[in-house]
Length: 88
Image (cartoon, rainbow, N blue to C red; front, side, top):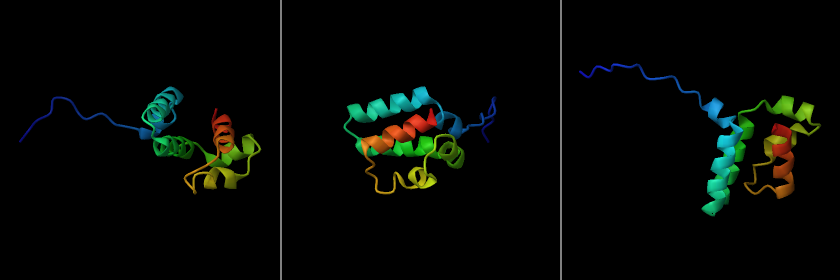
């Protein structure tokens, strides 16, 4: 039986998903690697970590925009900019 001297630390992925600097670095890496699907996944996870209803209300966006922007997996740059602006 292995005994650990330290207990595993608790991990909260939401904290990382809300870290704008970490998100920016990850997006930049995806862009450098020509991975647009990775960019979409990262943005989708970041926005999902936020309260979509509150974001929509605060920024006068239809909630459906937040919920369906990534459905087609090919949102326009205009839509992405609007969503990112709403999350800042």
